[in-house]
Image (cartoon, rainbow, N blue to C red; front, side, top):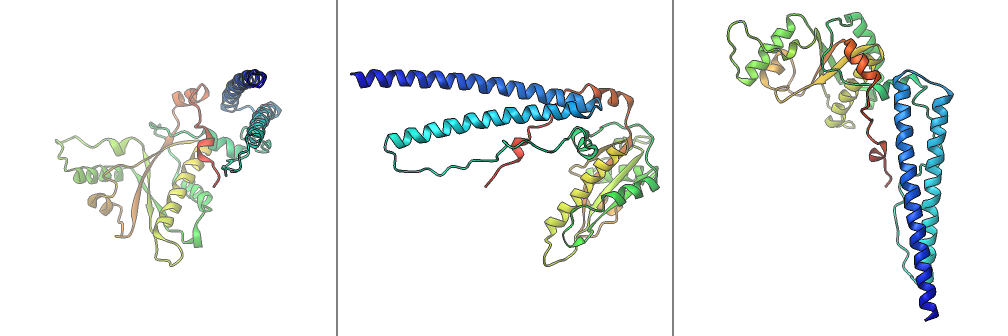
Length: 292
């Protein structure tokens, strides 16, 4: 009887401890969310320096505390299993270890800042970079990761009346016949479009899919470089992208793939104002990182 009462008291203490642990964990989670919101508002306002590093250190302390509690729980569970005479040791995947503070400062670093704040601008103003500006942008992104340096990608400039040729090719692909004076307005949403073409070559060590991935990487770097240079851009495609009439307009060979168009122009003032007050959170990075 005494053993049963002692066991009952022990269970009550354990439940109370778990409730306290849950409350502490929930509270620390809320604190982390608040900190992340402050960091986001901070770098959108263009501030950098020690304040941001203090917030990063605060997040690191919270992470270490949560990891310490987790390790304590694991140790107690292990001891409980051993006491009960459990002979089987279960193999469990631990996952990433976030207990060591990060040395990365996404607030202060200009490249990481550009990566974190980049947004697709669906409606851009008429002003555009010159062809010489585009050449320098392409120079900067040609360092894209490229197995065997095959350089199996290129961009086509589409300005002025060439946009109307794209309008006609899209209508032909869709089987659309318009009334006199009417036109497909989609390619006219920007004064400048850049078409991205993936042009894989035969190589015994670099499969075609990998070369398409390199071309897509060049496209994303183009967006980042334009954004950092002060331009707005939107990468668009659609079901008609690789139809016969559209491919013919872009002079594609059979093995080539049109990967869409980048609509480029100045960032409207209303977007700039919206960016400084944006509350849209970045996705949680934990969902993209794991271990084997």
